[in-house]
Length: 389
Image 1 (spheres, one colour):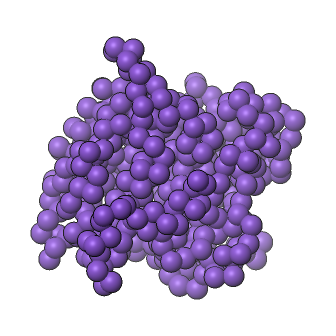
Image 2 (cartoon, one colour):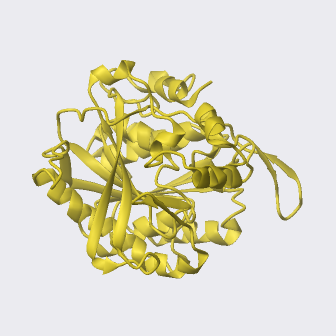
């Protein structure tokens, strides 16, 4: 079953009765069709250590679009590649995924329509930061879902730490030597994007693009990310008061964090073979240190790539997708399936963002109950009186 269809109909059997008509159901896709567009932001105040030019962020934006988009063709995998697929890019895709661009287009699916019209209204903003060697569009399952619920999701390639970034038609590949520098650059990237979104919300850019003027609710900004991106989101919230909520998947700073009161949703896979037990311990430690509203989700049959689009690209990838082996015992693991995994991640994200970014207290019942007790360990703190009052 294709993901677009799954996400539009996902309601866990037996739980529909928890949601009378006046209560929002986070397990169902939102009411809006989804658009997506690529733009480029250039920070002339910083020189990129790798490219030697100004820091350039190729950025994806997901957003609610008009009802007319319901019948339009959805974006393909290669639609996310500026300038199309070159022979060099084709080689890279085969090396990274063991699939051709045509294969990826067949296996990949999304809800989003490329460059569809932005819907009228003002929408909260969610910044998303990809993982180490990841891509700005590595979590379309999540970005699509949020946009369908009325969020604008903004995700940059962190140049030099992304698997591949196309800048002015030239590929910039991941550089492992830049990882330490990326820990400093990444939060600055997201803070710069907030600055640029503020300008974008006020006026058309130099090319006359006014699509997002007045559409961004910049009093409601969340920072999110997966793996190194979760670290990035947490570090941004430590230094930038414009961020009101954090959603972090599959990593957290081992040294901890300083903004211990911001509403924070943390997630981990108990069988994560990338960050391993030490990484999961850091996530739990960040949760325990938090004094504000916080929710910790532990996917019992989850791994590192449970929190990505890898299900749609390589369905037996391992480490959270398909099957794998425990490092300690070599025992075979069957990870939770895509539909269930995405259902857990998406529904709790929507409920948490709804409650703490939008102030939608209708989500309180869902946030305080474990809808998947066989698949999920769940802890909360500082939430009950804030969500229920």
